[in-house]
Length: 430
Ligand code: GDP
Ligand code: IMO
Ligand code: MG
View (cartoon, helix red, strand yellow):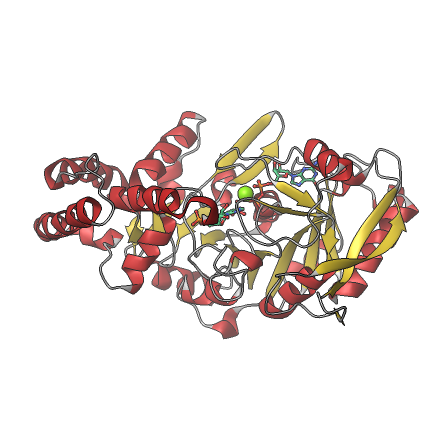
């Protein structure tokens, strides 16, 4: 039996989708436990590229793919994603299971997300505009609609009328937004169609997942976003609205912490961030441009260019602590092929000149102190044999591992499934 959590250690887009897909070859189920279609998980094999936003990456290998109670689902986007997957020949309905307790992202959540960002102007969060914050607010405010609520159509219609009235008032009076007047009738009929399609997939997922555990099966928990977008531990307020840490895999899927057998931290060989917020190792020079172009750093969900910078060991060391990471998958090493010198932040200098080696409560006015290492200056793209990796890359990996206090178990040298070195593959499944 294995319950392995896969979690991002930076600000998202570390390559979680690729690693989940890779490890799914031995998994019996893959579970998403938080977030929504703000995620964009890229999986490439053969000549095919998939970007999954909501459906767990396990679906590409036709493995049981579960949306746990902790996710928020925009049914319009979700059904579109399912249809697109079905067009490629994947039998989604057969393998997908959806929690009756998952929350819905409703149309007004997206409108409020957008209007709020507009109001904030320069101080905006830079959200994905997918309505994630407003949906989690309504969940915590006990005013959300859950997937299971759709099953009782009469009750759903009544609640919808009440909520639509309320939201229309808020939009008009608070946001002064006339264009956003929602019709309960239209939404009801649209959602009746979604229900028709999804009904066979809606189940009691905690029961299902615990059954898998009791049967000794292998389960992957596919984290979305990254450690520093966590609403408690991230760079607040420039965060998402869910707990992205491994601890939330238990709450968001309905299993106990005693079931977890490992936590694999996904880490990019450098750092990127989409949206606003502090980023101490961010580069604005040619090195930053080179990371951007070599790494093709554009958001998988919104297409926005990702901000790029050097590897930050304080950040990842903190992620190892917060998530209880047992080993690391290091991705995008090939992106560093052309650099003469590589830099790793090993401390921050504060404005009063003091240095700190542990991640501080605030990233305001800190500048990184760098350790420099020689680059390998040769093509490593697609190398799949450990012995063929250049000695400078091995030294870089060893330094990262020492600084963040976690062993490396996966090395990724390209975007494709097969461009990966897994050290001792059995370790995840014992
Ligand atoms: P996720 O959100 O964590 O799943 O990551 P994204 O899919 O948003 O972003 C990661 C990007 O890097 C995708 O375009 C992947 O195809 C790509 N990628 C993943 N691993 C590697 C790698 O080792 N090398 C290169 N060059 N690209 C990679
Ligand atoms: P994956 O799973 C990178 C960022 C947004 C914004 C902040 C809040 O692909 O790694 P939200 O729409 O969640 O309210 O936006 O969080 N963000 C991500 N950045 N990868 C993601 O997901 C992200 N999901 C949200 O850019 O800064
Ligand atoms: Mg992504």
